[in-house]
Length: 84
Image 1 (cartoon, rainbow, N blue to C red):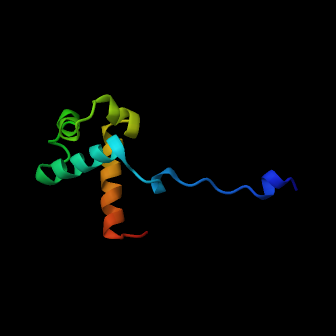
Image 2 (cartoon, one colour):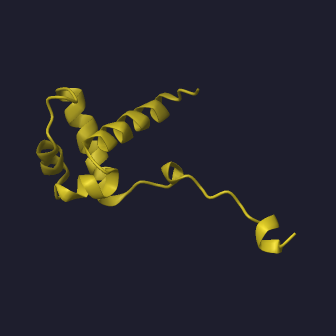
Image 3 (cartoon, rainbow, N blue to C red):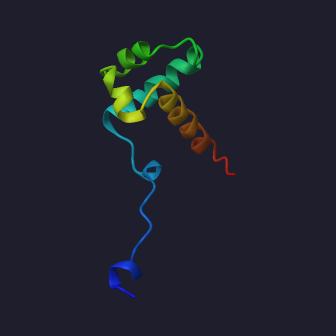
C-alpha cells in the first residue's frame, strides 16, 4: 500500500477549529440579540450592526441567515455539554 494512502488522516472537521474575528463577533452579537428578542424578530442588519460587520459577512461565514442561527444554536449546545 502506498505511504500516502496508509498514512492518510481524516481531516479535522471545521467546527472544531477556533472561531475568531468577524465570525466570532457575528455569533456573539446574534447570541445576545436572540436572547433579548427572538431568532425571528432579529434581522441580519441588527446582527451585523451589533457586530460591526458587513452584511455580506453573514453569507461568507455561514452561507445564509439559517447557517448563522445553526452556528449559534450549535455553540449553545456545546456550552451546555449536550451529547447525542
